[in-house]
Amino acid sequence: SSSLSSYLDNLSAGSTASLYYVAVDIYGTVGSSDSYDIRINGVPVINSISVSSELVETGQEVQISSSFQDFEGFDNVNIKTYSSIDGLISDVFCTICEPFSIFVSNLSPGVHDISVSFKDSDNITVFSNSIELMVNSAPTVTLEGPIWTVADTEVVFTATATDSDGNISRYNW
Image 1 (tube, rainbow, N blue to C red):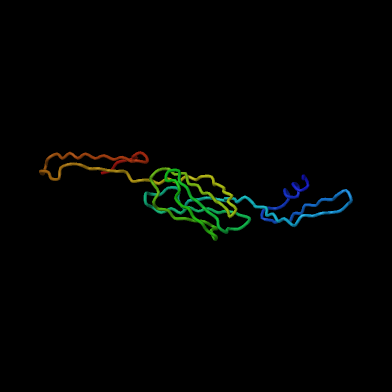
Image 2 (cartoon, one colour):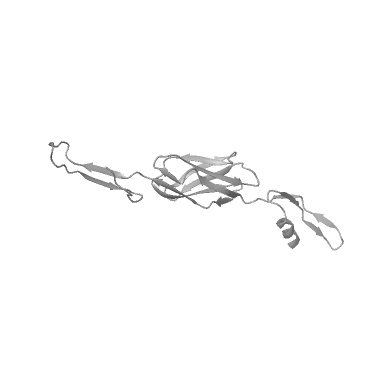
């Protein structure tokens, strides 16, 4: 009924209510159901997601951290961390996971959008916004030329450089 709906709408997340259904016949006799307990589950919240550095070199360790809120506590929760380039990079089941941090050093070069998902013990899953992380790879440089030369003669070397995740900004000998 609408009064039950209003009652349930006003309960706080994480609370429990005992419900009864009552019927009255035309003679005024009352019948009642057994107690029915219902728990109001709150939707978990991802408060923040961050990285220890927004720019790292290939192979360099980066810390990815997140904080959560779950009205029912952190029993049997699942936290997954994703990269837009490398896909799923962490899948953790935990009971004590606030605050949450992982350390990763094997991300592929490029601009990653990093995000997390949080699934509570009632199988409600929420997703974070993404944050950007640049994993920079070193330029590939080659140098070719003679392995010996005669004094006072001209020597020619050929050098090339490419950068798979950006442009070369300068060259130096």
